[in-house]
Every structure is written in C-alpha cells, then in structure tokens.
Length: 565
Image (cartoon, rainbow, N blue to C red; front, side, top):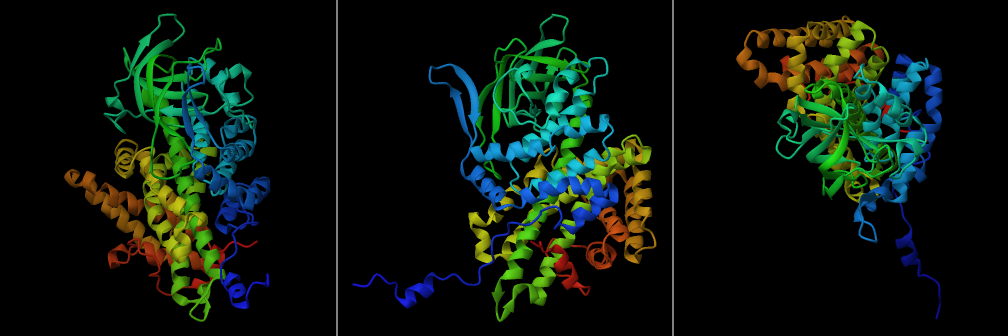
C-alpha cells in the first residue's frame, strides 16, 4: 500500500490566491500620512526615534501576541488559596508582552517628564507612537492612556504637590513593573480612573459615593460606595470622584497604602463587554477605602478635567489607529487577491472603495496629530484655544466615523475578514468604543456648544486655523462660509441650537480636516476629500457609504494607502 498522497488530494492541499500575512513592515514609515504629520509638526529626529517602534509593531510576533491576549481573557481572583481577599486579576503573558513594550517605548506618561527636561515635541512623538503601536492590539492602550492622562490631573493642585511628586516619576517611567506592591518598591507604575456610577454614567455630578474625612490634617478620607466601570483594576493608583462634605471631589486612591498594607478595593466582577477581550473592565466597591484629596472639596470635575482632555485625545488617536489598521489590512488584501480575471486592487470599483477609506483614515490621522502638536505648544494662546474647540470636535467626528469604516474594510476581505484570525472582527467590535468612552457623541457635541458660548477665543482659533487654507480649494472656501452661516443662524435661534449640535460639530470637524489636507496632503487626497465630504449645499456630503467617489486619481490614493514591506 503506497504512502504517497494522490495527486488530486495534493492539489486540494495547495493553497492558492490567498493574501500573505501583513507582517514584517514598519507601521510608522509605511504610513505616509503619519510620517508627513510627524515631519510637519515635529522633526526628522522625532520620526527617527519612532522607527524601532514601527518595526516591532509590524512584526509577526506582535501580531500573534495581540491575538493571544484577546483569546486568553483576564481572570478575576477574588481570594488566594488560603481564603484571603486579594481582588487580583490575572493576565495572559501576551498582555504583559504588549504592556512592557508600550511602556518601554515611552507611550505612558513619559512625555510630561520629557517636556520638563526640554525634550522637543514629546507629546507629538508619543501620539504618533500610540497611533502606530495600538495597531498591534487596542485593549492594552487603555491603561497606557489613563497613565498618560493622570499626570496633568495630579499637577492640577498647586497647593498640594506631594501627590504629583510621589507618582509622576513612576507613571513616567519606561519600566513596566506589574504587581501589587507599595509605590516605593516599584520601578514604574500605572494609573486608572473611576468616575462613573450605576445611577449617573456621564452625569458624574449624580455620583453618590461618599468621602469621609479622617481628620488627620493630611487630606486623607475613606470612601464608601461603588464605581460602575473601572478598567484595568490591577493598576497601581486611581483617580476617582466622590462626594465629600464640600461637594464632588477628586481623590487619589492607591492600590497599596504607604505603610505597605493593601487598600480595601473590592473587585465585584469583570464586565462581559463588547470590544477587546484582553483588558479587564471591572465594577468596584469601596467600604473604608483610603484615598487622598486632590484639589479642593467641591472642585472634583475641574481638577480631573485635564485628565479627561488627555484621554479624549487618546480616543481620537485610538480611533485613527483602528482606521489605519483596517485600511492597511484591506489595501494589502486587495493588492494580493485576484478575482474575476485580475487583482482586486486593479478593479475600478475596488479602487474607489479603498481610496475612499483611505481619505477618512488620513483625515483622522492629520487631525489627531495636529491636536497632539497643540499639546506641545500649550503655552501658545492660539494652540490652547484650538485644542479647546478641536478636541471635542475630533472626539465626536473621528470616533463616530470609525465603525462604518471598519465594517467596509472588513467587507473588502470578504469571508476572510469575518474570521477571528484576520484580526478584523476584533477591530469591528472595538470600533464603537471611543465614541462611548470619555463622553458619548452627544456629550462632545454639547461640549462644542459650551466652548462656543463661553470661550469666544475657541471659535476665533477655529476660524484662524481653517482660514490658513483659504484659497487652496474653492469647495473648502465655500464650506467654511456655509459652516459659519449655519453657526450664525443657530446662535440666533437658541431653540434650535442644541438639537442641531451634531450637525454643527460634524461640519466644523470635516472643515477642519479638509483645511489640513488642503494645506499639507498630496493634491489627489485633498481634491477627493473636498469633493466627497464638503459639498453639503449640493447634497454631496459623505453619508457613510464608501466607494462613491467621483473622478480623481484613485490609483494614486490606493498606492498611498497600501503598506510596503
């Protein structure tokens, strides 16, 4: 009896016409929009410093760790083997692999210390690195983001700098040091946040968790209550909101107290949530949990607002990252997959779809990196005012556009994109996240109205910024005038202002994106963006259906979208 495989069976086992794995590329340098933004707002030195990160992010090893971290979910261990309450969460080794490298690449709180040391463009560098590295796996970006965002909140209390001095060096460290130990025994630390409660959600003023002063003169309190959604409960320190005698107040809550004892932090359960499965999102209960006041009593929202601003920036960066990873996968697939007599990438309609997806992705990247540059220049009045208005605009618009883009990119892979190994189902589940975290679409659209009504310099900054592109494209010029006319009409009709907040925010965001692309992107990108996104008066605004571009150099845009090994 022969051991040879019959020829027909051997042919069946030979795989043909499957796109190779997208791995071995540099996620930074193969992204033209990212490279150009870093050079535009930073320098060649900043870009060069990101090259090692880009190589590692594009490796097959990083891709595999991303899959494994989501396949092996975190496990809550409320008790140890002897019955002691420990409330720890165990993560798969791939999670720690990803975290170690994210921290090591300076994506946590390092920019705040770098800025103090005179390092140029630290927030821009970190933003570009975060956008690129998050393409490996989105879930571990959550603790990285919260750690980055905690520092400006810790520094918000000028009369009490002890907490900032204790925690900032650890949060800014490039050493990943997991485990429940006192801060004094750690090489690096991670921060989390606990704001929302069951009854209030984004309405944090409805919080009922109580803070009782210990009366020791050191700003110590005990907390009694709960938090409905606290991600990464194994982090070392948390910024939380609770009702003190003087009103809603911000507190610093360490996992381990200075004397080495574990703080009372009960992890009730881990959420069974949409999106990534790598990160642990939890419900917490406090019963005598020790915390230290940050800022004055009753000023909790104002104290923590800079943390919210920083995490909102990361929502924009995270969504831009999801977009870029999805477009990279889609463009790579169609460049290597043949159907109906030729490569999919050569089919005019597929070119239309990929080019349209790339326009959305490039516009998101351009706006996200522009915001990061504004953080680096926070002492500049224009940059500060622009950040105030553009951040909720970008948070509303970019995050809102992500789910539709990811769905279309998945479709480009057909059935291959519907299986977990492709990575697209994870991106699809994750895509709505950033529209929910740090304020839903309505919350951010209303924040735009708040900025317009209370801070006139914010509107001036938007007008100045988009005005720098005037004359570059007649469609953009017209869109600017139409948007200002819409704003004027709504300001004159207060009863229509709130109900139209999303329409106004969407138009202001798209015009801001268009102005950046007209100024800085290749002509074919700016031309197609303006023709497809800014023609509201002609009924030509983009409705979320991709592949309906008219004219333009589609082939050039597709080439720009496709990664190169």
